[in-house]
Length: 250
Image (tube, rainbow, N blue to C red; front, side):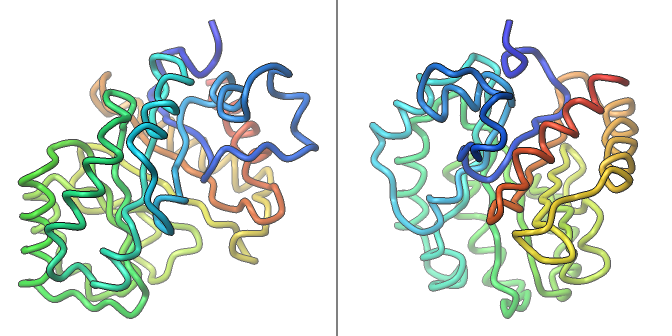
């Protein structure tokens, strides 16, 4: 049985499934990049959906390419988060869900990353959340990058929307999970150089401890997500595999 198909309380992966040449030996030689990736890691974050729409048939093909227990996190399009800034998005939400819904039971989570300049406006946020929740009742996580969104914690809890634990954190409280506590989502962008820097052994050891503590206290069917987004220099895959090795030792 491949590692990715085993039941895991940590859905660990990277942003995208690019395999740096330096890590090729850690993955099977046969298959597409996604198939090779999914043989070792149990989850992936689709970032390309932020920039462009994918056909429903593309999502369906991806879902068919991975083991039963594999899960995709899909980033909500920038048209919704950065251009419309969450306002008046009913049709765009509908279109997006009609596309990524073809992942079927492999759709694990929706990621809503907000621009740093987007201040929390209760009426706009509530209308967006209501529109999304009227159409989708699965896991949702939001990554606000303006500290005013701390005022939204009760709203997020009520709507069952988790808040990303980000590194580096755009404001101090963003370093820890927030919002709904039904699951956690760590999004690791690389530090000190965002998107480029690799995480060292001591940092990964500390993260392993935090994830292990979470796994010990959460229900058996609840996962903690951990996505490495430091992909610009190929560090994400190596960090994910190193963390996976540590978690297996627990």
